[in-house]
Amino acid sequence: MVFACIPGHRSRSALVRFVATGAFFLAAGSVFAACGQPMAPGRHAMTIESDGVDRQAVYYVPSSYTGRDKVAVVFDFHGSNSNPDGQLNRSSWDKVAEKNGFIAVALQGSLPGKVPGTYAWNVPFVQVSKAIIPTGAQGGLDEIAFIDDAVDEVKEDFCVDANRIFASGYSGGGRMLSAYVCSGQDDFAGAGFVNSLRAGRPVEVDGKWGPDKANCNPAKPISIVAFAGEKDAQNPYAGGGSAYWQYGFNTAIQRWNDLDGCKGNGDPKTVDGVTYTMYGTCKNGARIATYVFEKGTHDWPKPLAAKEAVMAAAKDGAASVTKVAAVVPAKQPAFDANVDPAFRMWDFFGKADTTDVVATATPAKSTASMKSGTAIASDCATQAELEGTSCSIPQSNTMRRNGQGVQGAL
Image (tube, rainbow, N blue to C red; front, side):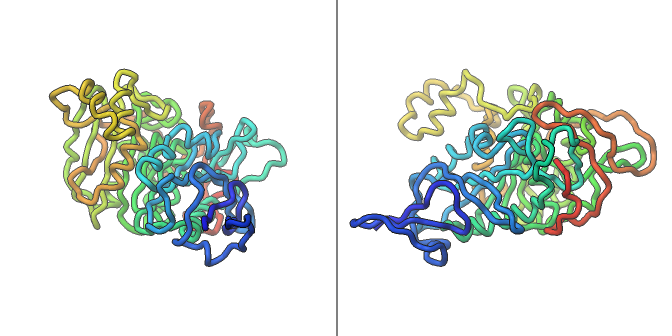
C-alpha cells in the first residue's frame, strides 16, 4: 500500500491512504508523524496553525524521498512583495532539493505586498508605511512564533534529521531570518543570506551606525554564508539606505564573527570580480562564508550565460561530464566565481570540516558622518520596488515569541 500527502490545504497533517480497493482518509496524528510514510513528490501547499491563525507555506518533496531515511530540510524565506512559489522560482532551492534528496520549505510572510498575491515579513523593530498595506488588510503577526511553529510542524510531518535543518533568506526574508536567529531560536544548524544579512537593529553611536548588541543574542554560534552586491541600491553594501538598514555588510559580518568567536583575517581571494573570504576558526565548529560581487545589484545572483553549461552539468550529474570537460579551463582558479547561491549554500551546509569557511573581503566604504551620540534609525525613506517603504521605531529588545516589536514591521 502507498501513502501520499494530500496536496493543498493541510493543518497538522491530513493525509490519504490508497489501497487496492480504493482510497480512504486517515485522521492526522502519530501514524503520519516523523518517519514511516512516503510522500507525493513535487511542490505542495500547506497550512500551519500559529497563534490561532492559519499561515501558508509551500514545500517541495524530492522524488527520492521514501519516508524511511531521515533527510535534511532547508527553509527558504521570500523577499518583500513576493511569495513562496515566487521565491522557489527565484532561488531554485526546489531544484537543489531534488538533486540532493532533501525537503525545501518556503514560508509566507504575514504582511500583504504591493501586488495582490505578494507578501512581506513583519520583521521586528521595523514599521511599514501604511501606503503599501491595503485598507483593512491583516498584518503584524508574530513571525518568530510562526517560524518556530513551522519548524515543529515539519519535524512532525516529515522524516527529517533535526541536526540538519537549515535556512536561507533573500532581501526582506534574510532580514527576517537574521532577526529569528538573533532572537535566540536554535532550530537552524546553518543559515544563508542573499543581500540581507543583519546582526541586530541599527543604532548610531558617535556618528557611526552599527548593530545594537543588545538586540542580537543567538542561542549558539551558527554557521553563516552570505552574498552581497556592491551595487545593491535597496540594501546598500556600504550602509545607509532605508532606516532599517544603515550599517553596511562588512559591519554585519564583523559582528557575526564576534558572536561566533571567529579568528583570523579570512584569507580573501578575488576571481572575476567576486571576492570570497573564509574564516575557519570559530567556536563550536561554526563557519562564516561570504561572496561579495563587485558589480552585484539587489538581484539574486545567477550564473553567467557563458558558463551555464558547467552549472547544468553539475546539476545533471555524470551524464554531462563530457560537456563539462569541454568548457572548464585546464587551470582552475582559487574558487568558482560563477556562483549560484542555493547550490553554493548547500555545499556550505554539508561540509563537516572547517577548511572551507568564509567571511567578507572588500572593506566597506565609509558612510557619511552623522551627529554624535546614540540614536536608533528613525527616518522614513522610500525603498525601491522590491522592498517597499519602511521606517524603524523604538521597541523592546525582546523578540522571542511575545510579538513585541513586531506590529506593522517589514
